[in-house]
Image 1 (cartoon, rainbow, N blue to C red):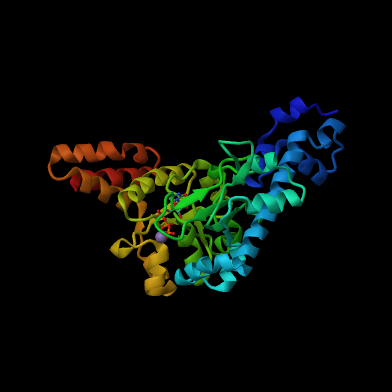
Image 2: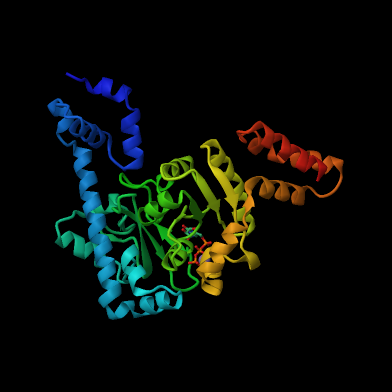
Length: 357
Ligand code: CTP
Ligand code: MN
């Protein structure tokens, strides 16, 4: 009999399935066992308590997506939301495809709907959908009066949500917390829709925001995913690496975006990617650029994007200013990245470029 302990020790394939297909450890074991017709001891084959929780949280999350979609489609309260989406240039088909919805006001609509379907309020709290009220014993909906963007895994299961205000309220986006089914650092927004195109084109575009992904996608740029904020993780890079090792990073050209770009380049290099950097003109993000100039122009600018080394060198030199001493500083600043450039010739080129300015 295979002991659970031994299985755990030989867990590369399991860990892989866990992170990539979002399975729990027992689920991963069962998957492999089924695939290779291995009989499992009962204590592994039987779903664990936490496993049941997981499944219920997944179910509640799918039901939530449908609820928010229905509110957006049908309710008078969502009229403002429908208008907002229209103003931002989203068409019906893409709203449906991405499962975009609306979280109504009131504070208890979702909880009411889900508890009626048999989900316990405590479970909804674990799913990040409800919050315990600080005063009394009750719960209230986590998302209220927000446009809802479902965050899905590669297979299209919804794991979490991002909710945007329709005015200047803060925070602009409210996101699901980390839960037993969702870890921000292991998913890429839009990957389930983009993965085929990414594989076919052997190339991906990485952007920051929900709409930076959705709007170009709507206009036919299908190989696009978003990191949801600026801090890309190794898990996200590896996930993308299953589909391609070629990426264009198209972050916002603001300071945060530039710093994030530098960090993301290191990660991509570590995972053996070929990276280019695209900086759009006039400080535009991909959403705004595509709405202004169209997808064709976006694709065209993609062809003129910079190899990452040039980008890094330019930035370092810009920061450093003139003089030999500053050049030394510039070299120092890029050393961590330099260390990760796999090719020796490229490495030398990089140094000579910076030191001769
Ligand atoms: N983000 C977030 N929480 C915030 C702000 C941003 O999670 N409070 C994430 C969102 O995924 C957002 C991305 O970071 O899409 C980029 O943020 P930002 O550039 O500020 O917003 P945009 O994507 O441009 O949003 P919009 O176009 O809707 O204004
Ligand atoms: Mn934007």
